[in-house]
Image (cartoon, rainbow, N blue to C red; front, top):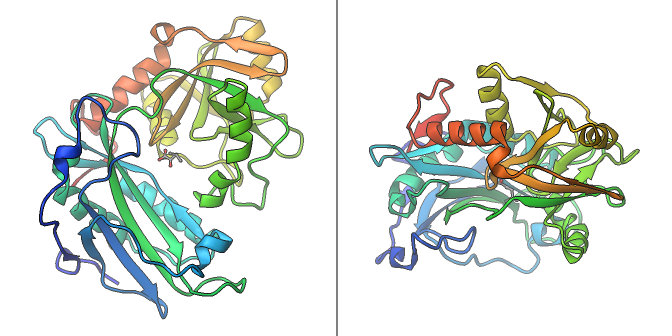
Length: 355
Ligand code: COI
């Protein structure tokens, strides 16, 4: 299917709700822009996509995804450049990842035109909702759900793809404290750890609730075989600055291929900083901390952007990291990426797509 500008039906709101947006108090995921995109898949093909007023969905209680979790999503962000024009950061990379998730979850490919062109038109229509303060953006949430009305267990045949958007400030308002998890497991080889399947997040709720009760913000997951190698944080990929090198776990079957992760690696390497993508054990991190070599740790994600880690706890080892002011590498990378996103610096890698 080709979704040209002509192909998407647009049904605009009669009255915008933009007056609900307080630019000085933007919380993540609380308020949604005026419109959303909806497209249905049936009989082996995508039907007419529509942009309609943001509203509730009407679904049968027997809808497949509610029972068996055939549901995937993405996270993308739109910004305003220096001339006030809306731009989207790396939507093609999210589109590719969405389809890697779709394949593993037995869901149909989302055509590039539907994902990127649909998103572009939606963002252009709701551009008034893109906040302009540093660290703010319009968070874009594309997602797909299986919509057969059938509670037998089988891959669905009907699906709905939607895109909703929400003005966003920082996901974490302060550096996060992390608990290294070695009881529960997020992902195993052969599983769905590399996908953005809804169930990956659903399964993390109980372990996350438990560590929150202990005063931590997020989990750093370890591998399922030995609980030895660190994988990713609940909402982010993870980076460690050890000596003068930056180290991040290599992605594969169990770790999400973060678009922000890739952007961070790229700009660091552009600057000549050594970035190693390899298995990193929790013992190596503890040893580096004890030797005074663990300089910084941070998480990366679309929602979280670059989030400093204030402390990392593994068994009796409470590793307290330097303040943000001393976190030279992650502060530099954060500024560099923001300069590219807001159009203050040349987009050498072709990451910015005009909405
Ligand atoms: C994102 O960073 O966009 C995510 O999807 C992570 C989280 C909010 C679930």
